[in-house]
Amino acid sequence: MSLFQLFLVALIQGLTEFLPISSSGHLILLPALTELDDQGQVIDVAVHIGTLGAVILYFRSDMCTAAAGSLRLFRGRVDTRGAVLALCLVVATVPVILFGLFVYLMGWGDAMRSVTVIGWTMLIFGLVLYWADQTGPVTRKAEGWTPKHALIMGLWQAIALLPGVSRSGITITAGRYLGYDRESATRLAMLMSIPAIIASGGLLWGEVIATADARTARNGVIAAVFAFLAALAALAFMMRLLRRVSFTPYVIYRVILGVILLVIAYG
Image 1 (cartoon, one colour):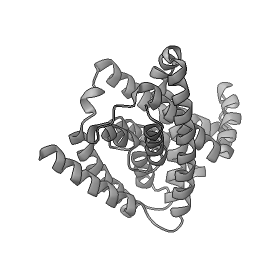
Image 2 (tube, rainbow, N blue to C red):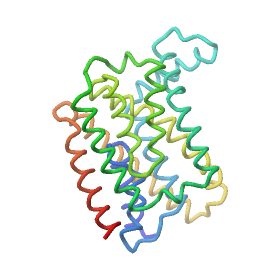
Image 3 (tube, rainbow, N blue to C red):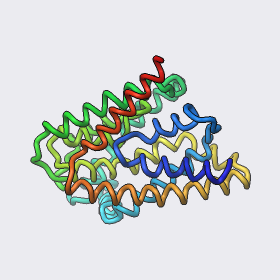
Image 4 (cartoon, rainbow, N blue to C red):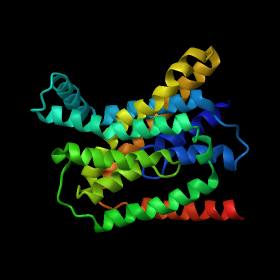
């Protein structure tokens, strides 16, 4: 794989993993709409590791709080903010693990990787995001996150296994529907992404690490670094932008891309 393709895949993953426009959908579209070869599992895993590192670094304060709280949670005590946060992250991750395992065992993954599916999910869930953002109340902050709301957001997150839905987009949608302000909904969605990325890669990481040769491993490291830098920039941009504008620019992008893909698919 050329350095240009490595950079392109990493850039797409890094920029789209945390923006509500679907990283998996864009990565599927890259070989589907161009003459480039599919990047393969090793590069997919590598760019996910890169974006995982970026979100952990950006939200390091929250992650330290959750890590400290997890020690109390393991002892059966949920009496600190960190323990509640750790419990909420566990609860929010269970649905995506169960649904992801079901899809994997049923062998439905490849059937969902089509331009038609991505076109419809881009369009439909872009409009759902707009609806939730415009009509959802603004009554809650991230600090008031509860296990009940974590479960609801986790159930919505499981839908993101459909390419084009966007994991961050659907969890932000759920957060706004539940009344969290834009910045809080986004912050919770980003924190939920950490165990979700680890869980989604769990089926592949061990196999990839065991079978990768030296050249493939080198390409993976390069892709991970590029993805890390792109994701960090995307996170900083989105969190700063949310203080001034809504999610409407992302919705417009999703709707336009969805329409174009449906025209291609049915044309």
